[in-house]
Structures are given as structure tokens and as C-alpha cells.
Length: 172
Image (tube, rainbow, N blue to C red; front, top):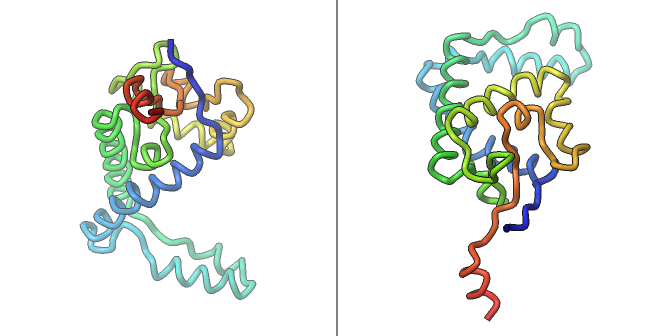
């Protein structure tokens, strides 16, 4: 029987931040250049930032940057596909999770997740975020540290366990 330690809110937050840097940002850059700049209007965004920083919130809110739904959808699907590929390749971990030593597992068996769980969990980020990020904040208050998207996909995030032979080698 292995000793399971659930990953808490802050370590998961750090992993998500790292995934944004090393997974979503590169995908976003590729999509932006593939769109020829049509995905997101950076000039309008910069203008709004200048208005907001000068204290003119009304002007900043009146001219919101336009995004292309098609390119946004392609970005979201690409991030989902890359995430699922990492989960399959690295047994429930993305680059950020791998860096901090946590992984996603089936909540009952603590074995690797399947593709249905991976996709359900990824799509579960939507209601987790739409509920004022309450679906993410649940991690801080639950004993099993599961978020809404974990509950929907029947997954849990745990610290990776070292194989027994690796622990014996390191303790000598």
C-alpha cells in the first residue's frame, strides 16, 4: 500500500503558472503568428492599458480588444490536445506538474487517468472558472484537495511516489 499525499492549492497554483509559461504561452505564440495577428488586437489592448493607467477607466472599458472566435477556439483546442498528450506521455503530468513533483491520478485507484478523464477534467476547468474560480478554490478547503474539475472527472492530484528500489538506492 502506497502512502498518498494530496497536492494542495499552492503547489497546484505554481504548477498551473509553470504550465502557462511552458505550455500555453508557446501554443499561443504559434497561434498568434499563424493567424497573422488576427487572433488578438494588441494595439487596442495597449491603448486600453494606457487609458487605464492614466485613470481613464471609461475610455479603457469603451473600446475592448477584438478577438477572433475561430483563432481562440483553435488555441483552446490546441492547448487541450497538448495537455492530453503530456498526460498520456508523462503519466498524468504536464511540464508544470512534473517540475513540482505532482501528477493527476484516478481518484479511486490512484492509477493513471484515461483519455475520457483527461478531456472531462480539462473541460471541467470551464465551470471551475465560471463559478468565480470557486471550483479551483475548493482545493484549499477539501481534505482530499480535489477541485470541481477533479470531482467531475473522478481524478485527484497527488505527489509522485518514488519507486521502492529508487528509495533504497538513495538511502544508502
